[in-house]
Length: 315
Image (tube, rainbow, N blue to C red; front, side, top):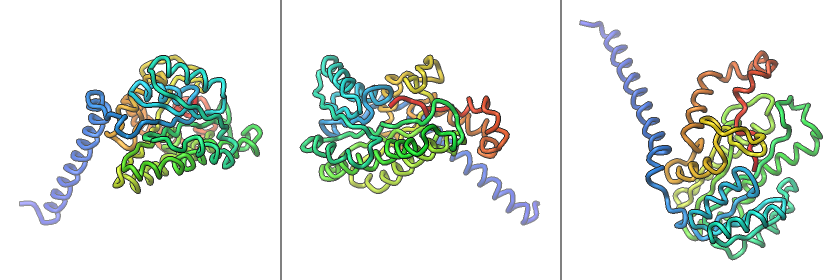
């Protein structure tokens, strides 16, 4: 017969094992639902409303989301800074999918001054989906904070584009969603924002803002019928990633957008696809925070190739 202390330890150990097994089973179920079951059962995105608004819609992930939303039956408002590109993408969508489009030409690095004009253009539209995709990096390589080129201007531009755009665009469309009792807001973050990323300090910080804002907003408004989904991808082949070759680790923007949209209704936070979710798990194991934040790791920049994620995707 075991002593009382040993019996208590055995019971505690048993509960611990059961707890971790249940936790693992729950994660497996969530992964299955998010990336396997979602391929079989999709939410009809048209139920959210007639129009989708996509920022940074002329290339990369933004263009892919706009096209995929049109393919699934929504009219699309394209928002970006190049009017010529906006017209080209709008015509492509109209010709290929037969959906109506509108374009809004603004530069999100200009800050607060652009939003009254956007509000005027959106007035009267039944906006069911907002994709806050627009964003920018500040360098084409890893750099210490003081090495940011044109730092005084670039810091403001990155904050305006990556951070300010998200709550400001949300402010414009959310009241109509609340009034109708339905709506979907998709905020594109990055795996570079899941954990602190040395040598991507400003970019990483702006992306964790997107993640936290999304999670808080979802908690506040899910009872009112609003879904706020945060998407944090790894590497996607776009202009900002130098159009790196597509493989089992790197997704094309069109494939990524399609798979990520399938997860709507299945998860409020997602890597967007199974490949990126597995990479996120592997990275957390292979590069723990204590090592990734160490001076040795930061000094030896070749190691940083392992932590280069979606941070340079084209929006």
